[in-house]
Length: 88
Image (cartoon, helix red, strand yellow):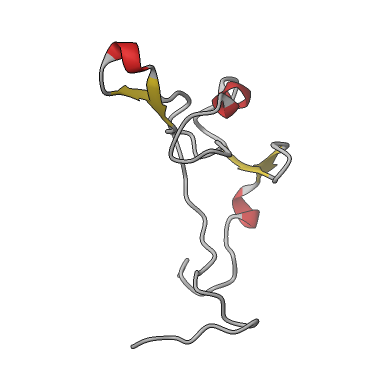
């Protein structure tokens, strides 16, 4: 099935992705200095731009959301459901 996009149905579907890594991973030769983003906050995906620095003080037992400006907001348990019917 193919969905044709228009202004109401873009080519993508909004979804939340939980990233638990707080640092990038180095790939290739060490002298290449090539780092791949693992936190999901980089503006240069898939490459790291240092945006993970703001995630270092996150605690593992909480869920956070970042806006386009990199401002963090803690998501409470009752805020996690998007209302799309997938949470049960």
